[in-house]
Amino acid sequence: MLIETVEALIMRLLMLSKGQLISYPREAQKLSNITWPGGEVEKPRGWVIATTEKPLIIGFPKRVGFSEFATDLNYNHSAQGYCIDLFDEVRKLVPYEIPFRFEPFGDGLKNPNYDELVRLVADGVFDAAVGDIAITTNRIKLVDFTQPFCATGLVVVAPIVNSTSSGWVFVKPFTLEMWFSFSTLFKANYENPISTLGRIVMVVWLFLLLVITSSYTASLSSILTVQQLSTCITGIDSLISSGLPVGYQEGSFAYSYLKNNLNIHASRLISLGSLEEYESALRRGPKNGGVAAIVDETPYVELFLSTQTDFGILGLPFTRSAWGFAFRKDSPLAGDMSTAILKLTESGQLQKIKKKWFCKSGCSDERGRKPEPKQLNLSSFWALYSLCGTFALMAFFLFLIRAIRQYIRYKSRQMDPSSPTSSISSSILFSQAIHNFLKFIDEKEEAIKKMFAQPAIPPTQARA
Ligand code: GLU
Image (cartoon, rainbow, N blue to C red; front, top):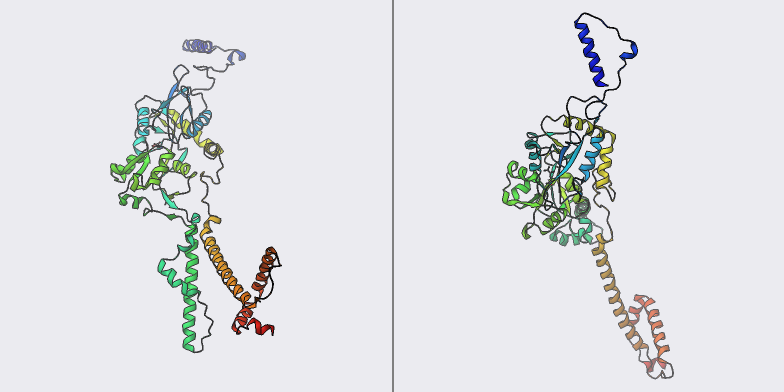
């Protein structure tokens, strides 16, 4: 049909050049739909992206740790992960077919180097790269990135103290010396000051009590609500100056950033590849071959912290970055994919994909991080309860011992040695003794004291 139309056009042009004007019947001017090379009916944009015979080769990171982001499936040319799902949705929004083939990048033993992946796109080994690829200055010089699909930034992660889980949290607001002086506060002042000078001293003393008590309350509430650091590191600056080992994610741009931009010596940088390695390095700490803190991008850190309560982010992200898909320089696909990414973001589909991968057990906020447990539980007060219990038990046993001793003395005074006891069975005697003892306990201590204060009456006299 296309050939026929082109032929008719040429004929018409020839006739025109000879000065003849041919008029066609109306129905002859009706043109059918154009079918473009490759079987497409939509008008191409003058650029053949790829064909089924020669598909685009799209590289993706074959991740080992944090494989939720992108990794390969165990059969050829297939990938899975958050970034892969996202790419699938994005390409559906591009108004033409993109024949492509996935090609894994990485040996499957450790996370691949992302700078290397980007370089392979620039060198033409891959037509594009799809994954959790950070858009950095060095990379943007080599390839074209799409619009970002995920905002990230480097943060510092370090061990924190979970105050609410410590049973001794209530002693923390004061130092040892303060606790010694604090004991004087409990001395109730029953005597009313008589002189004016006495009253002045009393007012000052009460004011001191007020300030100390409210300071204790304020300090305790800050300990319970504000995240407490367990090391001297408070952020990136103190981490740099500490001279302690710093963890970073294997293959990440974070290594070159820490080394070149923040001038941290390479010997201090320790590569970590998985969530398990993150946890063990932080738990061991710098003294046992671990790290003082880890510097990584927020999505990985949020995933790590969703299962941990002993670690936390110190401060705010100290770099702002984002992830995008990488295409060869001047590839028109980068622009079309960018438009599609924006459409996906605006439709809310992007968030849904994120939730699907990172909120399997529920996310309470948009960033996929569970909130810190701020509730106080029984274990937060176990020490206080134990102290109360111990003192109550001690007091009870002391009281019991004293009461038994008093009862024995009381009985020995009342005892009539001549009264026959052999006819009563021992079990009746025992229950009688218990009954008498309980009755004795019921009596007022004062009455007992009074009784002991009286001189003992010999039993013979009493009988008389
Ligand atoms: N998002 C990091 C980057 O673009 C990669 C993280 C990793 O090393 O696994 O460099």
